[in-house]
View 1 (cartoon, rainbow, N blue to C red):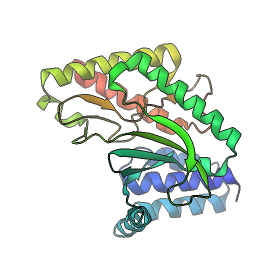
View 2 (view 1 turned 90 degrees about the horizontal axis):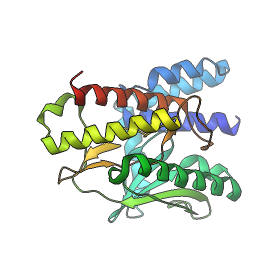
View 3 (view 1 turned 30 degrees about the vertical axis):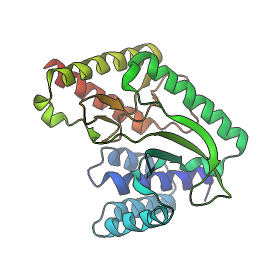
View 4 (view 1 turned 90 degrees about the vertical axis):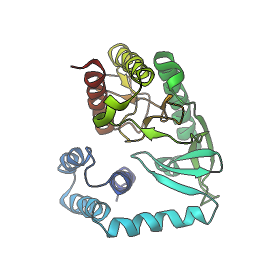
Length: 252
């Protein structure tokens, strides 16, 4: 199996495993798989069914967490690109595909991530929780170098719930409107969208401060290709969620 196909299957397995059966990316995944060979398509769908079928998914999530727990870390979950763990007061995002790339390729990706984060900060400002990007040994496999993103752990962080926005304070609603305005400007001017594909990527901390925890933006169709591993499915989903937030915060 080619590396890119293998990585695609691994990424989708983890995304489905931790997002659950109602993940909005599932239909996009099914559509993409029609372009694969029949054998790869069958293997991909088997992986999705395993990841979304309880209690097998519960067993799989537990099995994935145990190795990290043995190293003093807590497995938060996984997105399309990375596995997320907590170590003391820090959150580590381990970019899985980088384990199959050479040092030069990873350095290129790190530079692109840092540039993307700077772009987000230009448009969204203090809402973006800064990440530090580096190339270092995998926590479970010291012989393998991976891209790691580190950021402070935010206590009490809870994702923005579109169904309960009416319960937010005026200050919180004001922050959401400001966030949407900055994000929309970035979409219109740069063809990049904040990563809102994960349910917890945008949330409020214990003091009602809005935080975007994944500060690497996603490229939309027609934008410059500065992130080699960009997938259009998370980008499209992020744009859809931004539109829902805009409508909910403006009453339209």
